[in-house]
Image (tube, rainbow, N blue to C red; front, side):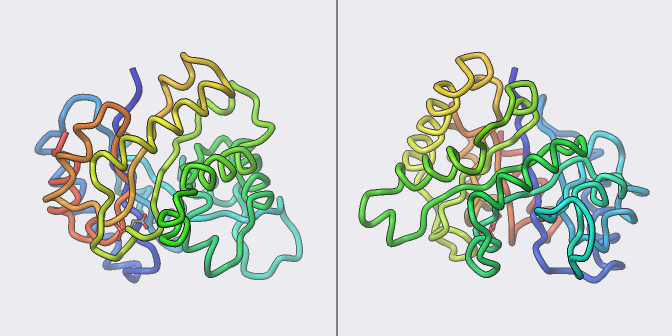
Length: 251
Ligand code: PGA
């Protein structure tokens, strides 16, 4: 059975002490119980990873928001996949649209990051999604197909099984606009079909595909009710423990 996952992408928010307080609140609230088979992941800034690892229980995953596309060396300011793993994190977000847009990350570069993350035993959360122009032109499926083909090319099936996909239409991120449940389900099914072509039915069926983009406690229920939507990658609403947990309880 594939896992249901609600992951909080804190982006560049919270200083360390505030991040620790937020993680503590998430932990306390989660102790009140979650629906069966639902797992939480927190993705704080790099500086918070080791501190959060100390306070989070094993059943809450810890993710970095990015890692370098090189293994090590003279790349000032970069943080490698091995460094992320050594902090105690077990996941890493790769290919978030903000990385693609503001830091000009390309599909081949993301493919290198995915491979380095897998080699460091991290589970990548690979983001894909079209922008508004591409949606309006009706080429959204082609865009996502290409992102998956290039970003996830040449990954052995055993490794692919550790990858989580996040479909995040760029026009829905931080805008308050959400994909309709039908738009989300259609794209998630399309992505699952693409994975099926690459790795077969069983692996496709076991891959968690998360929705991201203005997901909140009021719209999560109808998004998560779709058979191919296995949870969410939550930005803004993950900065309030109660909202984040309300989303996780929307299953
Ligand atoms: P949002 O961000 O929930 O604030 O729209 C989602 C994301 O970027 O992962």
